[in-house]
Length: 215
Image (cartoon, rainbow, N blue to C red; front, side, top):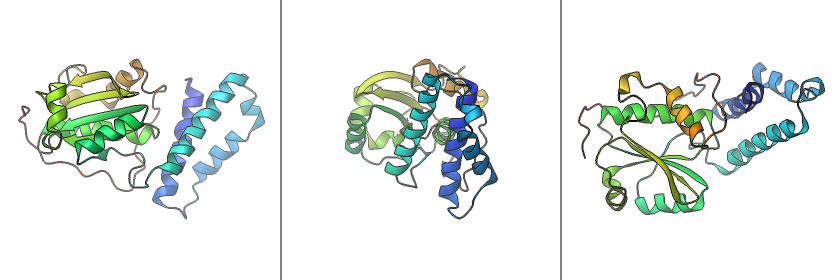
């Protein structure tokens, strides 16, 4: 996806989140975006297929906004039961799951990066579950080290990452851009975020710190 389409899609998502945070607030940024989307001169710069791509991306966002609970939109959703988790995996085309421990510092970092991605890619379904809540899946997937992130496509495992092995092994220098590149490489998302600044009125609750990694 080219940068201008990415910018339009990103701006459209942000307008949805701003409205969610404050339904009565009519942002000038939103007005400018609507004017841009309705500007024939702008749209005429694109070939038909690129206009179709933009329309398709915006419709996906509209569908997700309409079908998603306001508290879950653009967030990493906490799941308490592995049966519910497996049902979600089978019912959705793409699902990212983070197996974590609340008191592990490295899991906290991964949760923070996933939360940034979730806000910038509203159509992604990103879940997290504690290892203790998913004993069957922990055994089946052979989870030994946390954080453990696995991606499912159409109910089948697409890829996984253990700890920070695919991101330089140092969580202290793990940028969200590296996670996004990983997702693009595996065709989980199709665009790079232009601005990772958050417009959330309230961040997701952070976990307590601990350096222990083994489960």
